[in-house]
Length: 197
Image 1: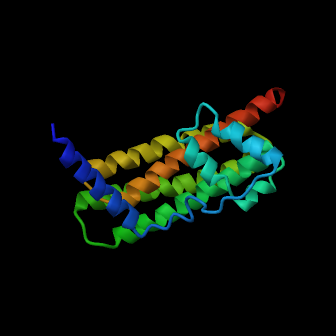
Image 2: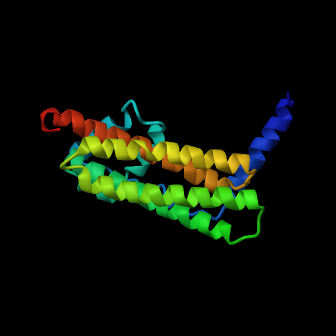
């Protein structure tokens, strides 16, 4: 096992590289922190405390935008979450497309192309779910849930191909958080309207 000093050094290097990466987090984590109306604030608080949420702090920060103030119900919050998930997927897809243009091994190219397809699927799924929230949250719940394994497989492909790209790993992690938020909101919608589905 590595001595604690070496582990600290590795952690500092990783965090430095990650923080200096040029991936704009503004499309991924909104920077605006605003005071929420009591109703939308309670909706956000309930959602971010849900069982499926993998990172409560990320959830609260992602939903601390001006758009959330206008949210009047769970369906509107769900639509906003799907839009944020799709925007995150598009931003991360752009990074993948940028990295693919750089020279690399055939294994790395194969892994990157696999991830490009996973992110295209994620974008379509988030956009589809957004339109299904009112009429069929149960199907929307399934559609969001299946994004998770796609992104997990993407991560495995990157690791197996030894692709060293903190920006991609961060994008995958954020996607996992948006999937958990989407799953939680669609589960909540199912519970709010049990007889309709």
